Image 1 (cartoon, rainbow, N blue to C red):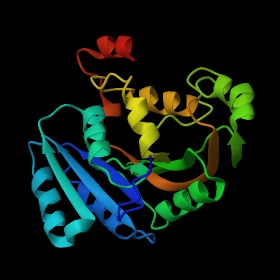
Image 2 (cartoon, rainbow, N blue to C red):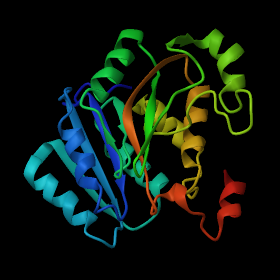
Image 3 (cartoon, rainbow, N blue to C red):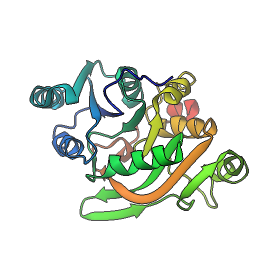
Length: 245
């Protein structure tokens, strides 16, 4: 059910772990959004650097705009779930703390969500690595996709479009807008111990319970790749994680 008592329309959840070098740019991009009816929920996942202190500093400066949760280190999946439980908005967006977004990122997502009365809005993104920027879009064209099309065309190709490791729908958590209530239902069946590929474990089950999906391949989200990124290395129990996924 929609929380009609909420003073916020959109909750932005930012899980953060040892990102002292990057989180300032991320938060500045969120504070500078053209759409203002938002709350920013920072989940400090047991950082051992100054990330937690930076979160507190922003909270002190911006007051009710920013909420901070300090947790023991459990990984990004649990961090996102903590943020969802704290969120008061009916629409939810995730942003990784080492990334940043364009000023009209939320305005674009919300306008599409509301005009189509959609369950989810999906965009493209820009992959930022050192001095290279690569535009990444979904294989499906811009449009509003309803249940009959989803079942016949999109679902069969969302994981495997044509070739190996070619997603029909980008699997990332952060280039999308979700309904909070649907996310909570989705997380009931997700193993939050998954630390690599956890986006896939949420995005595709969420899509399967959606009845109206909007795809708009504008690139408003900047996805930073760096040496400390989860995508940049594999932990010792990588194959155990894959089995869970």
